[in-house]
Amino acid sequence: MRIGHGYDVHRLVEGRDLILGGVKMEHNLGLLGHSDADVLLHAVSDALLGAAGLGDIGKHFPDTDPQYKGADSLKLLKIVALKVREAGYRVSNIDVTMIAQKPKLRPYIEQMERNIADAVGIDALRVNVKATTEERLGFTGEEKGMACHAVCLLEE
Image 1 (cartoon, rainbow, N blue to C red):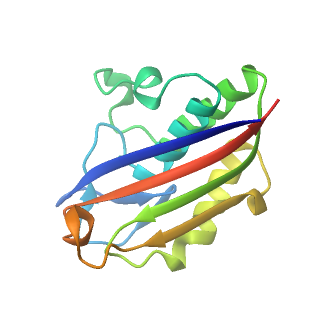
Image 2: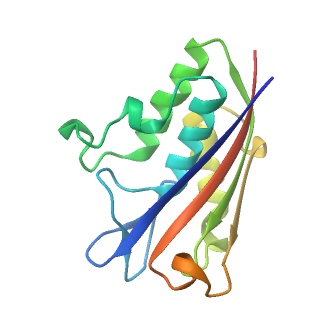
């Protein structure tokens, strides 16, 4: 068994779509990044890559490469899952903690879990997404950005 941890953070800005877990949400701000800036899927990708000893998302999809400009992070996660399988591992489970003051994520969580499960090729019951605020503290609490932690378990 191998355990991986992923962490990502992106700044909130005007004029960008807010996409989390592959779900486009109605919100007045979006996340800034080279790709679609899906902080949740980036953390999941990093957890999977780390557990498999394959580096991180920046190694595989550098923000200096124009082909990833505006990239769909669900498609990138599918590529990550393939790399993990090719390295001889299968995903046992994924657990995610999304940190954001707004919007409320509860209505979107089941779809996020299904999106992740479909991209990785596991049952949705093996994916858990949670959301929390930081009680208006720090950059997430002040709505300047969003952060996400993800952990996963791989088995040979």
